[in-house]
Image (cartoon, rainbow, N blue to C red; front, side, top):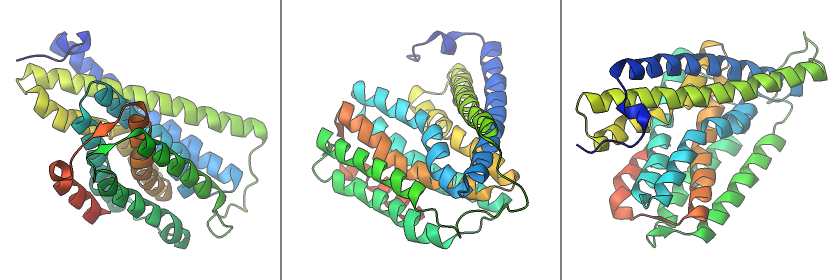
Length: 289
């Protein structure tokens, strides 16, 4: 069996177990700090946790998918790059949003119905349209990136007073407090992404050791691994009573997976794919959406 290149996969089992333990700790503490900083910033700035989840948290937790898709595209593995986006969107909707709703059912705002849900549905519908000619080219990528910038602007500007949480009982923190909260967001994201990388490295190493093929590992461990930051952040947000932030994270990640990740990937290297090859996956993603 041909093994994945990289010393981290060829070490002893104890090293992989250490990676799993450190990665799990990184996911937990990174998610804790990210949610603490993001929810605090939402209160300080007078915007809803949903808006922060749709932008800051969603951008940050989508970085693993971006890295995987870019590397896959440059290595000529367009199917992996495309499958990573579609698979992550399915996991976000089915797994992460499902667990969040079980833990802490979120209150869906009217603004969410008017703004974000149409954006999610349009981004999902864009995929089969872009793949009609069998390739997502650089022009398509540039248009997708413009869509990501437009959505970010709309998400931040369209927070109405009734969307904003009521915190009249406490004054917003001073500028120094806001900088500290931003520090929690940045450090939390870094620890979260690093923990996800260590966790996936450990899981892949153990899976290869027990005889799983690289193809099966890629379809299972790596696919779920790139969604670990979203899962960890959403779980902690739901457990802390910020289920709005968790919903925003899932919806924002799904939108950015198509507009930002596929946009950057296609701009760097055209992504090939056929509707016949991913048709069933796209249908399933559409039904979940």
